[in-house]
Length: 149
View 1 (cartoon, rainbow, N blue to C red):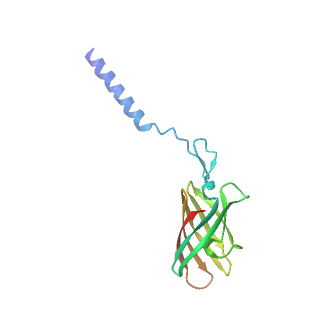
View 2: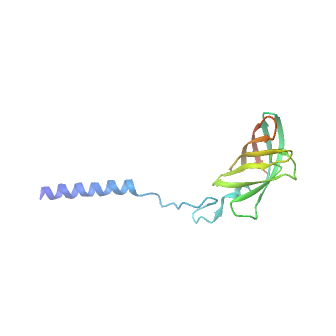
């Protein structure tokens, strides 16, 4: 009888340990661009709006107002007007890469220059780290910090 109790206890401990190590959270993993308990909230929503801030670049410091709008192309893209302070006629397209990040790759900002970088949203704050690469010359590295208007 004592042997059965020891075997049963060992089996119960083994099952408990196995269950504790193999069970994962009940939180649903959402597709990129979506979040929330039902995975129906668009991640880009937190970026949409007007943002005012400053960029610190190798070339100098600049006060900038950005506008982030939803893209009609798809639900994980966003349009940014006046990125890098290149003017309101300059609109670049970014792609949501995580719940709080939009990435930009080789976006034309006129004058033979391209912009690549990432925007990260945190509540009413936005950070934007990017580089501007001219067709000829030196790449300018910038970091911007913005507040939602």
